[in-house]
Image (cartoon, rainbow, N blue to C red; front, side, top):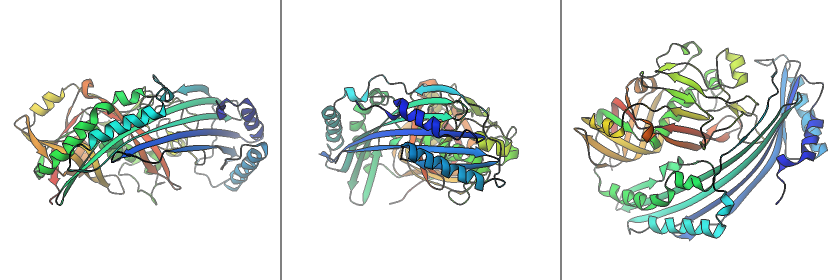
Length: 483
């Protein structure tokens, strides 16, 4: 087997020699990434493709300036050239930085994704046969007109070193399973998926069993067909019960992005908007009802964005962002904390070797409550129970939103009485979360993720983790899409 880049002592020695000893602070972040993508669509195996990507990001702080330079040339000459470019930019930015103090810590440590069953113990032919089996189960009804089963695995190895002696080694192993079935009858088309890509995480083959991948295809196909004859979602203000795979999107858009400190400071203004949250809100603002408890928790085993250190080398630890509904802390790494004077977390993250790290949500979780799902349903006189996101729209301050779901169930007098199609709802972030009136317990707490969150200029597409139980909201404006 070819030696991994982070295991090359010769490369590590070259990196250390290249870092400038006369700068205030310098770091090198080496990233070695490999991925495999398999899919079967309409019972036909699609082309298999693999990605390989390696390179290093150099950061130099010197005399109040900061410079970055990235290179895929890992020779001595290539690394020295990158250091020279980063040093040049550090000199050019002297006197124009919003924060001038370089990092002072030089930590050491490691992180390894927990893997129970290594991906390679399931041979390629077996992986393809599993997808072919799921494809056959998805396409058993003539009304299913398009269907797909896919698997992706991704391995990322990182080495972070600094001129002051830091050494952090992290090994990430990700698995992304997906199923989709689209049914059609006349002008009516309905799609059901396997959690809209949310059922992904760190680990090996066991990730498939964690989310019931092998048992899901038949249910997904049947529900896609079921939606063809279901009535349209009712319209009006009512109770709204959200399943964990819809809570992923609700947490992500109306808590995660608004709390990113760089966005609050205005850095995303040109690309994806700012935030309705302002610096003076921290410590006093009632973000939600007293039932709302939200944590930044990169320590959850197997969650998509778990890690030991962020990409600036800050040790990661669990922190409450919202406690009993009150906003306590933002999502900002060391630089944003220095700029804003606000408490943050270790979430300075980059998508790869050729991007500098920026503030990104990682594992952002709604903590379990004390109610069972059955108790929440029984408490609803008139409402809907919505599953799996399929559309989203939110304004540029992450305040007003409108989300659509794949599958809905109508609840009357404490009982589920039928399926509804084309369900959607809208709201305003602070009002919505303050109307949280029920949070299910640990039994429904589901650890999921979003593999494709985009942010930044140049764009960075990165994975974020989200976990939640079922959550119940009062007085939500619900509506259906008429055909």
